[in-house]
Length: 339
Image (cartoon, rainbow, N blue to C red; front, side, top):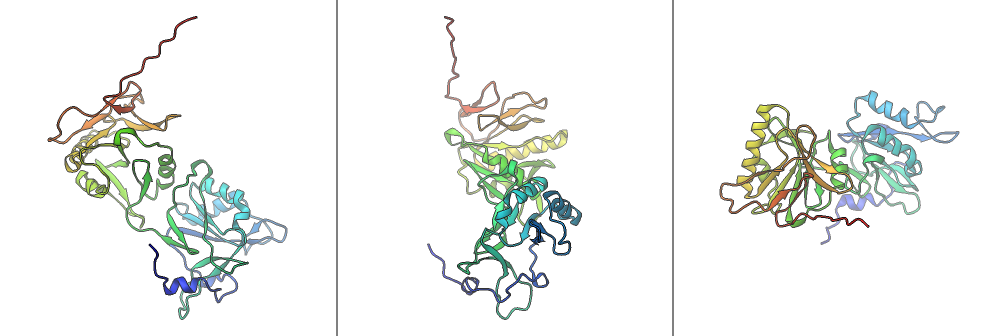
């Protein structure tokens, strides 16, 4: 399926009217910290107002923190940003947020909006082809994945995403907020698909319910019925749904969360599996699977929350290691015969 070119699509392929990046006409994007850098006379990159000293990763990170925008991603407004990938990768690691840079061979121009006197979008323009190129997203090295970032990068533009913050999970979905987006994205990539049609949803427990964020930066607590509606596109009826979460320590919140898990089961028709109250689900090193832990951090039984109309025994069982497997899978016993 191919979209019809729009006026903006046509304009963006033309060289912008401004030959240099003009900070006075630059359009800011909510949730993105823009930093304007220039090549230094003695190498490296410098702040335009401090050209005598090349910036370091720590310099940039400190500047972002002092601005009060350290909860945002960072966009570096300079030509050939990819030539400094090592520097910006370190910045991403220090801030635990993505850093957007221009590709090698591209310079910063402003998107030509004919007849508009307001702020203009910054676009990486290829020096050779004179066509826009997409921004490159550098993720924190220890948390890097092939999964997408907080923003959409397309046709040289950076655009905010809309709707609920959801990341693809093998056999499920990760629900995140702005605060935990980067770490949720990293852990989601480490989980393999579960066998037997088991669906996994990663979500944060909060105030006796399920915390759901949106790309506008707001968040709210969903009850079981609301979460069921949000998960409507997943094949849940008659299946098994594993919740990747950590229980609250407060007894009242635990009781409320258990009730919401049961409501989720009633509404979806799925068997909802959670760690025991007070416990958590965590990734198993080397297994790319989840195990249930109790409040003391020891392997524990997964708890089944079932609809009143569920028939027959549960289809899954917990292993001694806290893993969730098909009830028909028999434990294996390894016999070692001494020589």
